[in-house]
Image 1 (cartoon, rainbow, N blue to C red):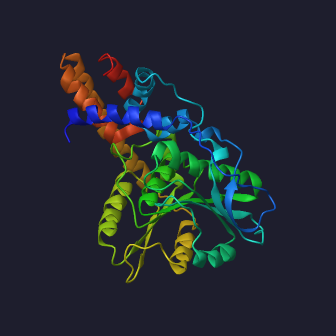
Image 2 (cartoon, rainbow, N blue to C red):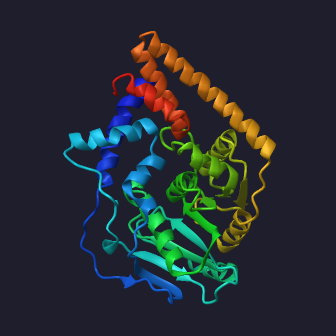
Image 3 (tube, rainbow, N blue to C red):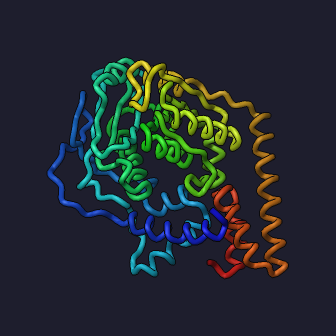
Length: 357
């Protein structure tokens, strides 16, 4: 896809994503209100509390590239709409929740699961693992691959974490996001954009490279935190060929962006299936291991990225100063897609000098 095509495509995506993020008002059967005393497996759980981190404006800031995010207000205005506060109406949403009977001394761990299907389930063979490791499980219904990533899957995962953490004694160092297949791709985006919420990610049979128009990098302060604290664990079936190839590309991408705390676990003779209890147990042990950060290696990697970014922004500014506006625009769109939030605010300032789009 050429730079010009990227620009036209991104504008179309902005309109679709922005409209999808407006609140949904759907009729739903009453669910079970979440309470602090609930133990065991509960279905059709209803949460009531909203997080500022799940607000539309915050999702836009963290999960869209700066130039794309800057177009959202104008795109909504053209459609006669405005950005609402929260993208979902919790009274119409239901969750599956499993809470072990025993409270661990250090507090529960929490696994927020993003499914690829619209129904939410806690695999029955996972329950003993949750009990053994003192891990709460939560997943939203209506959060499958057909649902909007920004308008539903992202806020539902964030609201699940927020409500569980308010109702139970949860260890903030043991809050993880996980997913299977398409849900795993969303889990990786959540982990990178919300390192202040999630301490690790378990990616089961699905992942993508980061640092492109499909998975933009968040603002620098957040990404720096992800580089320092995020632990990513890949789980892939030994017979699941395509996801295994994607996993390798995703791992290379994470390394090139200085996210070094990465592990993998292969399930022998397994195709494209949800990981079994043994794999889940191993993945949780890996993701909960202390993060090992080599300060010198991280500093050198960051310096290389910053030098490359500065050089490309300087090239864009040179083109702009020379009156080569079309070339400058293409260059800035390429920078925006690749470096995302790391390029702001300079990338936005240069783009504004073009007179917008």
